[in-house]
Image (spheres, rainbow, N blue to C red):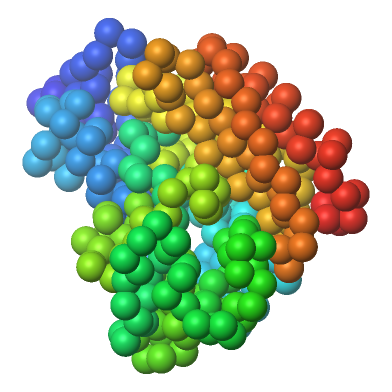
Length: 340
């Protein structure tokens, strides 16, 4: 650091020492935008810890500044996302701050990002995937099933709280006798409603529960073949401005190759389906022992009366093509009205 440049004002080239990165002086601190939920803040700190591990010289320099941002998706809790504009509402205000230079990069749950990002913004990095599965959490008084059928413990007509049409469709396809109650809010809010007796069970992303250390004996991780996860579930994604090549180079150096491949397959499948938030869509990719990539995709009706699930396999280098091919196939063989 140049003696004439105080460490709280500019980031010198030595601060990001890596052969792939050629930084110039930057204003400090670097501002990190994220949703203001406990899970989003935990994910942001996970990202910053990883970045600091990669660049040890950043430790103790007050390089980063968190900017929690209240999004429309978090503010409106009494309606489904499909009714107020879709899952992109979890990123709208964050990306506005990014475009206008109020933050330098943004941290997201990848499943909350639309496949087509706003002009001037790119997905620069995906971090190692946490557990991609959904989890069933039972209300007090309901016993964990002692065999392989995770929903067998729920009596006929039991209420399950969820705002996800993807989870709803798959659940009703298996158990059309169950009733669905819309449940919005952050993880803690939904667990609180469950504990208060608002429903017999709820479904949440297992990754979020693990990151918040909220898994218990009542948490039942669901096999992805039983409940196909959301595309991008369990992956943290970082967006930056398209013209900020310096940060893009830095973030590319910490990107997880496996997460990048599976995210490409799942997100290109979504793009090919071109469904709205009213369309139940699931996508889950993983690497096989031999190194190939396997992708499962699902399209359904919200009431569970129609469900189409298919898989495809191919090389990791072809991840985007695989996703496009599977999404095209699913769309071709599904009723047109479910994509309206």
